[in-house]
Length: 172
Image 1 (cartoon, one colour):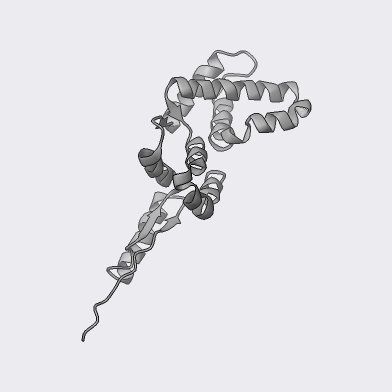
Image 2 (spheres, rainbow, N blue to C red; image 1 turned 180 degrees about the horizontal axis):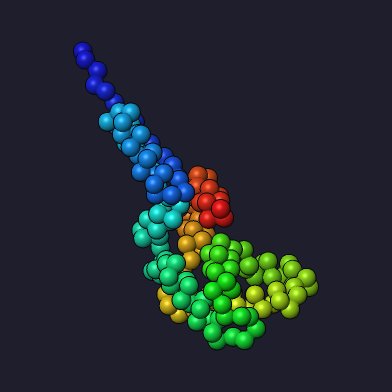
């Protein structure tokens, strides 16, 4: 009796910070053996969230870098507390992309007495940004990841395997 070769397909996701690293790793897998890439998802954190959101998302589109910049520029033009400059816009782009979910109601309640007037301006801007996203039916990837992780169908996989890793990539 001759045994056939059996390939175990397991769900493994390997994350790289750039698409170039993804391509390089996939080529290495392919060079090792024809079936070495079976069951291995090699991707970037953003691409993984996009893929999961497309299947499991609630209907909003993930905000693009361009959309984020345009919304921030519009909100800066509507206020008079901060200078409407490329530097201010870039600082807000980075902050909102990476820390939008950190400034939530629980955080505000816990630190209400510690907030300075400048902090309150930032909180107000964050609320306006979130409202603008809702109006445009957009969502930040970090918000999408948080929502996906909170859903029962996906929570185990995301919480145990990749949520903290994905957030770590965004914070780089």
